[in-house]
Length: 80
Image 1: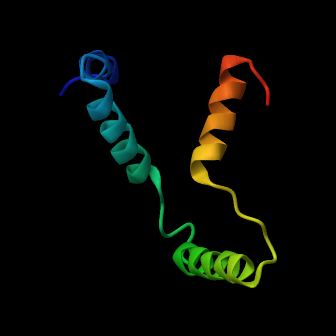
Image 2 (image 1 turned 90 degrees about the vertical axis):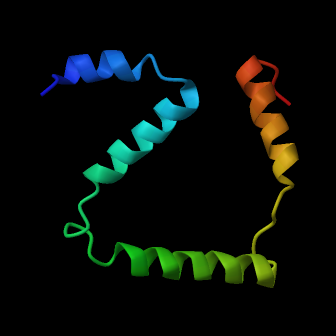
């Protein structure tokens, strides 16, 4: 069996998209459903609450492109 260091060396040779997919799978494998048995139900309730807030006008939404532009500007050091 290969060591973690050997696997890491091999993984770092993969294209970025494949590395991201691998990382995602590794992170998912660490999730312990038994430790959070109600997590799915809690997320469903939270999503419903957020949807109600948007539909009722309780929160203001922003255009995703505008948000991404603002984030990109901040990362480049040009605050807007």
